[in-house]
Image (cartoon, rainbow, N blue to C red; front, side, top):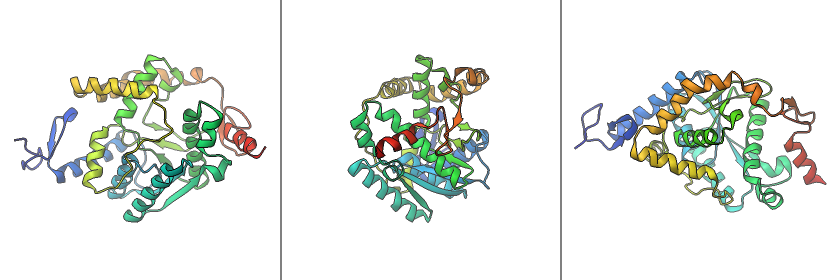
Length: 301
């Protein structure tokens, strides 16, 4: 029978890539301590920072918000309502209930109100709606954080996300993404600082933490999300992890240590266009008007 590494009681969970058996109480303690160490390791943000947590209603963002709250960080949440019928309604309700339970403020930004369109409207116009959705969310998050003077935006991207994304970008040699593939991006050029505090946590660990914290979260994927190639890369990484525990964390951390510094030195060379500022909304963009302001104009036409 496996024993908890901390107290030698019966272990309730085993973390494979750390070879770490823990009881329920010490798993919660380990999770939050490891999160705080990750924040410090990558110099993401201090305890005094005003932190904006991007909330989706899924386990990752809610578990992150819970852990940051338990650790005493000054946080507020923001939910981007994409107008995806029942999915957005349920996601918003789950997020609002959670915010109420932990006594924190949740801001809601409506895509329809901001731009005049919803993601279903976008889907009817173009096959690239999924990638555009990601770009729009990043735009709205940055704009909200900048206008409301937050020091940093944090997202719930986890190790599974980062490792599979790294694999895909490496196989396709997407240099502009590889040159910025780091868990914290500094502020500058109109961008608010961004961080991924869960970058060293697997989806399994986050789900177990959420379950033990009695967090109600939405398990369904976005109904408009296609079977993207990123899922193929995720399946490949899962198989490697199953056969060789620790593959994901080694692949990701070795990239950050050995390869990222080389690519990042030449990041300006890899960008397709230099950044400018949109003359209409003031957000950083590769063109003026920016793509969101163009969408607004099209919606009004």
